[in-house]
Amino acid sequence: GENVEQHPSTLSVQEGDSAVIKCTYSDSASNYFPWYKQELGKGPQLIIDIRSNVGEKKDQRIAVTLNKTAKHFSLHITETQPEDSAVYFCAAPQGGGADGLTFGKGTHLIIQP
Amino acid sequence: KAGVTQTPRYLIKTRGQQVTLSCSPISGHRSVSWYQQTPGQGLQFLFEYFSETQRNKGNFPGRFSGRQFSNSRSEMNVSTLELGDSALYLCASSDSYEQYFGPGTRLTVT
Picture 1: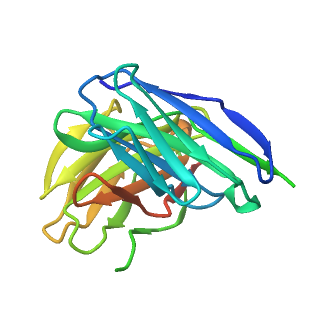
Picture 2: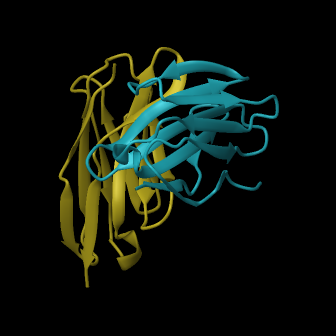
């Protein structure tokens, strides 16, 4: 099955700076890579995703890049704000033609005022 | 559209008991997946249902089971509860690639 590694586990940045979270995956057949944001007491919220036919996708201050050859993908958040503080998870499909995701261990992003 | 709803939101059970959790997906979504979230193991996939059929299953013991009804609502059951089953149980619904999560059910086993 798929294996997803995520780094770093904790990331502290100054408000206004950029944050980058990186993930690697093991199954070269994986074709969909979502990112989730989870705030305390809530379920994960889908914030951006990318499919394997593109190398980059951007939505306002958030972007995701994908390198299929190296089997890694990254989340970029620019001009960070206090409300960006949360735990972020990357994921890839379980495989086998069905839904279901394998998640990274998560990154606790802390925005310092 | 209304989001994914899960009931109950909080539950306290005793070791050895069984529990049933419920999930109502977003209207029109036919796939429901279940996940267990713990501080130590993170988010782990339990199983996925599509049109009342289990299509995929994670690496959990047989005490964990689920089902899906014709209206796409899903339930998961855990029998003979153990202390280690204390976790946040999340369900997610999808109609294609994107999965949308509910708020979860916090299960505490004492």
